[in-house]
Each structure stands twice: as C-alpha cells, then as structure tokens.
Image (cartoon, rainbow, N blue to C red):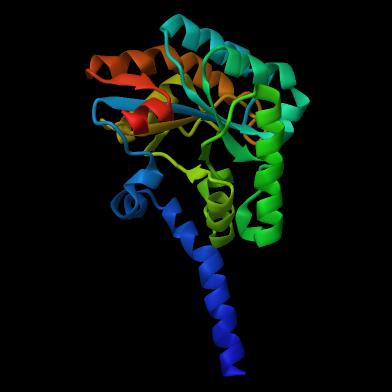
Length: 235
C-alpha cells in the first residue's frame, strides 16, 4: 500500500512539479532561458491568445507604425476561426508561436491529451501561415511534465516571460498596463501582452492597443531594441 501511495506521489510530482516555474523569481533564477532572457540589448515583445478580429488588426497597425515585429503565440481554435488574420500576421513579418490548440491548463491533461493538443495546434497554425513554429507558451504559463515531454518530441522550445501587463483584467487601462510592465522591464527581458480577450475580461485588450506606442518608446528610450524572440534569443 505504501509503495502504491509513494508511486502515485512521485507521478503527481513529475506531472505538476514543473508548474512551480509559474513563480517568476524562482523561474528567473533557475531557468533564465525559460523566462525568455535573451540579448542584453534587446527586449522581446510577445502576444498571446490571438488571432482576434477585434484587436489583432489594431495591434498590427500599431506595430507597423512603430516599425516593430513581434512574436504572436496563437491558439489553434482562434486561428481556425480567423484564418485570414493568422495569414496576415505571417505576411506582415511577425513571428508565430504556439499557445496550444485550446486554452486549457495542462494540469488537468495527461500525456496523450497534451501531445494531441500541441500537435493539433501546431498543424493548424503551420498549415495556415506556412511558417514553421519553434516557440511554445503553455496556457496560463503552467508547465507540466507531460507538456515538457510533448514539446521535446515536437521540437518546440517552451518560453514564458519576465514582464507582463496584467492586460487580461476588467480594470486594465493603458496606464495600468504600462505601470505593470515597467516593474518587470529589464534589458534582455520578454514582455507578455494579449491581442485577444477570448480568455480574458471583455474589452481588456483595448488597454494593450492603447499602451503599445508608449511602451515601445520607453524600451527604445532605454537604449534597447524591441522585436521577436527569434532576434532576442539568436542575436
């Protein structure tokens, strides 16, 4: 009986243990690459949960005006609903990453379901955009043992973030997004924002759109470049 309990505890730990990386200070210390720490002269700008017809076009317009290319972690479900937007992102020169097919915590999914989700999401997005996917960001930033194994098998690199804007809340404003990003903004960091409210408070991504020009100006004002994860990690 004790052996069975111990084996079950080990299995749970192997599955859920990587979720400890959701704690930013712990993650930054133990796994800087997973946190998205890259070139010290650069900041990576990333967006989750799109594409979204209400916000992705506005984000694209702002980025084009600013002369910035970013990394978009797409959901397979959203890309399947809005294929033209997925293609627009790729055509505009932005980097495409995988956020999964569905936006569900991997803590409730076993190895087979996790592998199916990542495989399906990657196939849908790559078929639509014609771009190979390198980066994967799990929903809610929650890694699991099954997720790590699936990513390795699919040759995907997990990456989270060093700063976020808390732009998924009902109270988010351009000012609150900027203030929250500033607290974590560092040379070599990765910023998480959202170009969709499909899993957030309705209308919350409008704050992200409004905050983008000032955010980019501040990054550049610190003497830092801003761009994609590919540039960030490979430079």
